[in-house]
Length: 405
Ligand code: CIR
Image (cartoon, rainbow, N blue to C red; front, side, top):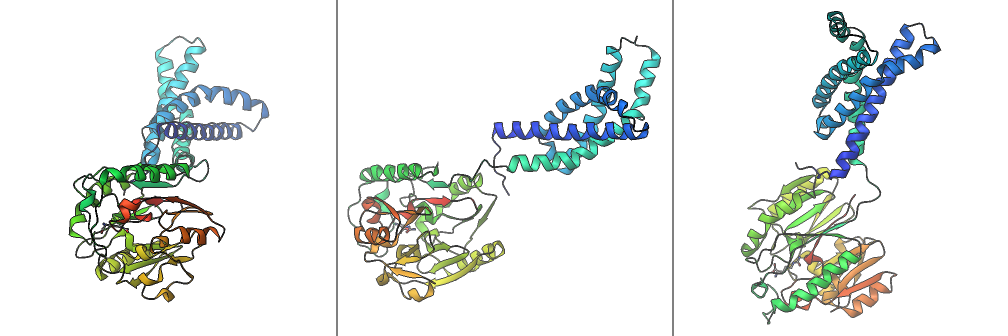
């Protein structure tokens, strides 16, 4: 299980907050204990706070260092931080108070210092341990998980291979594909995602894999859980190696479909908590079974959809932001499987990338379908991806979108 990486500024801020909250709790606790045990006289409050202040300041610095080193990630780390911080801070604080009072350093002073460790300072030390484990851990957890608003969606893309023209073909006849001509449209696709607010992550180029640009087939995201696919085409199996690394830092958990199970990401259509999976040339029954076992505990229902006339399920259908499934009927067996289905008039019109609640991205090769969707109140952006369409690609398969849930 991999954790999201903490930025330096986030770590510094979380450490400062953790140290400050823990120290204030310790100071409040020790002042309260001695205030109560000394007869609860209001006049004692000020002197008590002043007496413990030097130790509290040392504790603040020590806990900040401990938090930076990751001590508050575990309860035992917090205990160690509390013990070490509490003992060192009370010794150094008491030394400071003695030196500041101008007292000469005699054996008596040393004995007092040692004695106080198990006496007056013991309250401070115990308070430091208790506060580190309770207040410190709670503040650390909230501070590292805090977000300044919804995180930007992420889109993972992979540059086209120089060998693009050798990509797999299943339903189309091979026509000339020019890898050089594919670069500009791909750049425009990426620029559009960036303009629409996606943080674009570039996967390692994989020139030896002609179809690697169709990255949607290599991994499917369920919130922040990544499921690495098991490509149904032999020639595409090597594409997933570098994907593990790419999604590792973007996911809380990485799962994998493994052989003999096969599953292409292009066969997986998520509509809310329903996951339609195409059972066709690329995804087999075992792949669907493995996916179901991974995502059912996450609250998803997997519905298998037999497909025979399209390469992938998502070559035939995708979903609008409102969950309506749109598709080209000639490529589908039975649209009745979908709760709400809207036919589109062009094969290339069945693929939409959801850009937001009111906007989608479509292929420039499907103007009638784009007009139909625009007429439903959506902003429709288009890109010309004809070089990729010659290889049975579509707008969805050029990226993997991750939205925070
Ligand atoms: C293939 O046959 O695997 C590629 N030439 C096209 C993959 C398109 N991917 C997709 O629709 N999800």
